[in-house]
Length: 607
Image 1 (tube, helix red, strand yellow):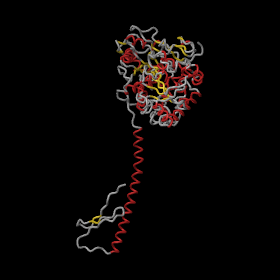
Image 2: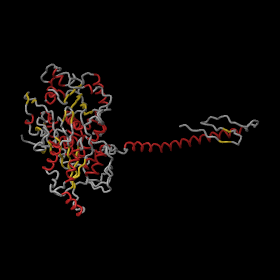
Image 3: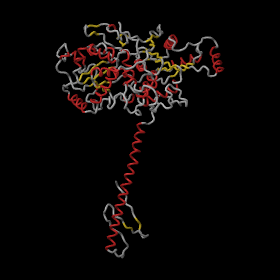
Image 4: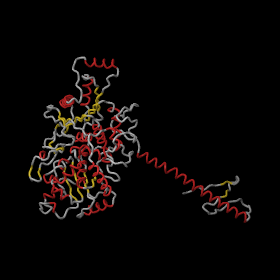
């Protein structure tokens, strides 16, 4: 610590005596002709000066220690404040002011403050564990306040999740095991299988697809005892909190492979290795000797026949001996995992209710970051919480003009939405009698607040035209039962921008708002809708895709299960070694309602 030099003034002549600093006696100034002081007097001055310097030094040390004691807590508070800085509203309109009367389900005055006294299942039936920092990720333990699950996770699933967490912590980024595995991967030499084997997921698709592919990859990692790592460069950290305690699922920035270079034509892809007889033509690949240091799995979009052999048991036995698997997918391939004999017993133990895979794993894995969660809860409390019923309508338009997607307006889509909602009694019908609107308004005024029954309709769409038209219809004509219908739409982006962070944050907020609905209407083929229904644990009414601008008849149908659809499922029967109808092999894997060639999991025991 550096101390300043104090000075004492002697007389008015400007001459001064400098006191010693740190035990060094400096030259004393005195007026010309002044005799020097006696020796004994000079010695006393020296001692006094030294004592003064010592006192000054001790005082300075004490002051420095006091300053440190005062500064350290202030710095810690500053860091804490920065970590807990006010969350940002993600939607484009101004954040609403909330009413003082917090009339919501959980009866809390501040939904951003942890409240252990509130009776709700914050651990989601055991899916989650205590110990995470609640301030840095508020959604993890608060989602249960806005959502009641219809299903309970199995004790075996909970047990396996705890083991997976321990594996992720033992072998994850920053550990000696990871450093060694990364070093061997960089060397390009064959790697001996250890307790730490990895699955690295390359992420590239839109938000709904991302949630489906991450869930699929995690289940595969769980089944094969691998550590799941995900691409750090696709805004995952801006959207979701870390799911595993004490470690990260983001692949480190110094990962030795360039994942942008992988494609279907990559020589390291499993399909190409099979095509090029890399394994020496051995038909039983489980017996192949030398295994490569890593294998790239191309399970993306229009993938080839040899790529699809990933879903065969013999190929899974071979892949078990590969330390690093690099996967690129944009699909929910879970249904085909249920068709691999080696996985079936384990999957039955994990999910006795087979159609709850996405529901349980998504709620375990995905916890929106504070900015997203703040926007979700504030929007919910401001517009949806006080309604007697909440109806979520997810609208995805597939009409195109050339190569460009169009969002409308399409009157036949609007008619389909209203027909579905009213035919299925999800929204009330309107009175068609002339003058009914004015009469109903007069009756409401006369009755005061006797009929305050409200249905809140949350619509999500790239276009605002559909929600405007639904609201206009209920404004112009009263409902037959006097219920008020209010329509809300948080955003209308006009077109999808899957590489835009703000766009994806809005999309994630809307998925979670939809999942807080009491009933759901979704658009067929939409992964956005799949994610919302899976989080909610609701079987939606699926609007079928129209053809030639004509509304389908019927306009919608109830889903068989809450599970997403695997759009590009293989049709190859690995045991029979020929194509087959894989929707008729086991009772719990069926063809999807909205994609006739796709597969989905249902909770059925008979074909």
